[in-house]
Length: 135
Image (cartoon, rainbow, N blue to C red):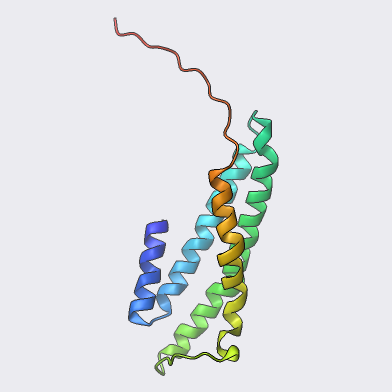
């Protein structure tokens, strides 16, 4: 799913069409929802050290998915509709970038730290494997 999401992103950038961003952001919301539901499902497993982490990460993922579905996807949809009538110009004006600041700030700060946090997440204790013998 993430590979397809990135393909949509690259398509949008190269084709200068926001319809790819509509699909990209929708897939990110779906991925965050799936991950959050998975984390909520495993939070009740016997390894106590990860319960709180799973709940925090799942909550953050669901908030992210709600943001994407309610703000980001509709924004790109509206942009795509307006793109059909004119060509985009490169701009450095605050008014043109103001709607991007929230997601860029979160993505390039909180998102990065959550990604790093996944690597350092406590692992459940290993269960010894039973040796199987062929007879």
